[in-house]
Image 1 (cartoon, rainbow, N blue to C red):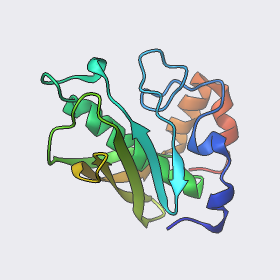
Image 2: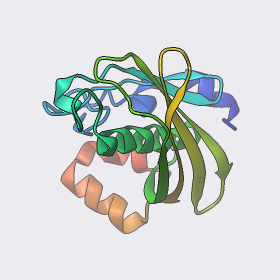
Image 3: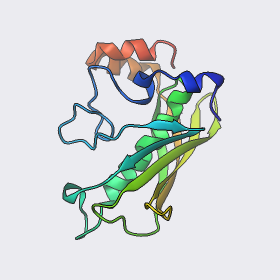
Image 4: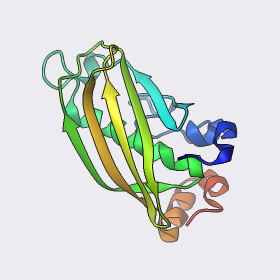
Length: 166
């Protein structure tokens, strides 16, 4: 469900290569963040994640809130394939099995519907052998101009990316 220009999508859109980079999930300058970086596989936004002991919930397993944050972020990144910015309006997460600390995990997200007001998306967290450990679906709303203005006020560099949105 991507546009024809998605293959040529500037990396600054899919992965923040600006001087901001503070997003908790994918920001490389966030010292507490996960530092995940995305790539495209067809119409799916994909990343790999190997959680460590800092990501623990119960002993030996990844905290469910972090899993939800990663699934949310990968779905939200799908909007940039249309060069749009969205915020999470609603998200539902289903945990199917524990995600072990130290396991090599695959995270993927895809857009299921695009509307004038936003998009619907789905995501999955998979084990190395492809077993779905968690999945999510969400409704993402286009960011209102007032919120974009506040973001630009906080970080002026966002204006370059927000120019055609809202």
